[in-house]
Length: 109
Image (cartoon, rainbow, N blue to C red; front, side, top):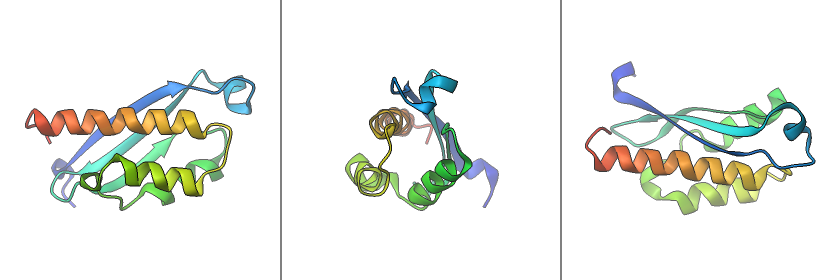
């Protein structure tokens, strides 16, 4: 895939208090690379404490088409990720999704 066919969006939320994540970082971040033609998530990363959690998040969201809406993406997280940081992750994903929607409306995506 040509590099200029993708965009990078991110979203952040406060890390949940009283968790291992909050001991090492203040914010949870989500970064998504999205194919402009298919609107598919082609690469993803999140600021989790462990490599396993980052990898699981990646595998969960890769291939999702943002044109299918935030609800489907949220359902993936709700059904597959059961960690104290799930609500913060949902908030960060929502912010990244909103950035992508705004870029598309502005004609940049």
